[in-house]
Image 1 (spheres, rainbow, N blue to C red):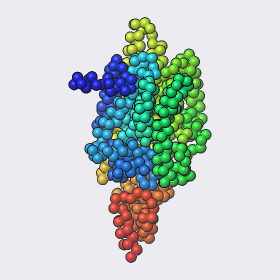
Image 2: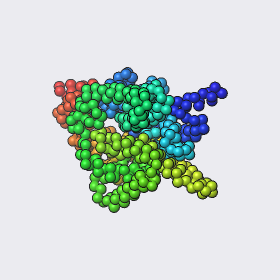
Image 3: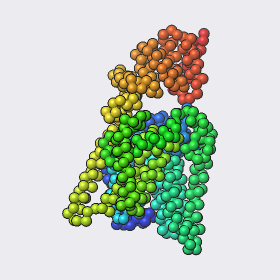
Image 4: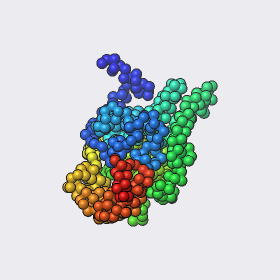
Length: 561
């Protein structure tokens, strides 16, 4: 035991951690684990089924993941090349099977490690341990991070964060020790970050900025050592871009080697708003994100950016006046090295998730702030410690106030973990918050539908939610298909045909709707139309339902007699 205790300072010494700071960092780790302990009993939620449980990529070779895209359906082409995150799921499936609690445990440990690294980074940027501790604790307990931690499928975000922070700290340590070995190791970690999520590329300017003094230094060998330390990053970026381009171009998703620039095929598959629309969306999303950070009581797994911002003109203008005033003050009277670093960190890492890059994804999500908000935690901690009252009695009140805020955030996070327990709890919470959100009702209907599609009561609940969803948005994809199944299960083949026809009008390649409409048509004696649907089902490329092809082939033979 003494050997282990004695070795800990040496292990953390590679990051330049002083023994006096180690206890503070371990406190951050402990708090991180405690606030997410109740998430270990959660199950698979939302996209976890497609990404983990039924994903055919996780049944193949680990090496094959590095030549495939991060998708769950062979007809769904996405420009996501994140093989390392998928590799962790594959290895876990081989080790313990598809059991959710160990996967949640890994996510919690990664978050705790990230909180420790945030503390270490804050210790290099802020003036003292108190500020670094506050920054680490804000990152550890703020409920804005619950989606990234509780939603197993988004592990790519916390993995990328781990590798970004590790690479930066190791490179900084390499400069301090005037060697290149640490930089080579840091480049390997950053390459792992690239393979986890594209946004890890944003860490490069921060690492290069560390070398600016060395590149300016005229001392003999200083510039050559700096160049030697940066060389492995050039190799890592080249390796990543080439592998990404080879994989995505083979599928026709990407034509250029620069991430975010998709092919014409990709742009034809997804409806991308024009650049000005995407820029204008940030007029709403940035204040909404900041509101969630200041008062995280209305967090959601799904945000909708209003198409018309005119009704919100007054609150948005007021919000932007406040944002401008605060940023102006931080850049003048509140200016410090730590605050400038935090603002630059937030701006740089927010850019990839701002919607400006052409990526088919949600316009807003809490997980998008997991890495960018680290900069804001630095700003908050820096301002709190720099202007902390000097009087002993008033200082105690300040400590009580900060502790109260952290406790409230912790309670909100613990409560938020329960929302991610399963699909029903998640979407019940969503429709409570946003009763007019068609996606929320569709998700809740899907949750009831998948919980037990053989139970009439569950199907009734699902149908009620699907009807609410369609009343709000008749064109929402997938809902008509589920309604068709419910009606077919009840013996209402006429109603099923109507639902499946609407589904195919929205998404002509919906093979499930095509096959089941053939079954419903055959039930009501429309054999010729049923035969045509079965043939179209076989001719349509895409995923295969279990035993569907042999069934369709058999019906074609029977109906063709």
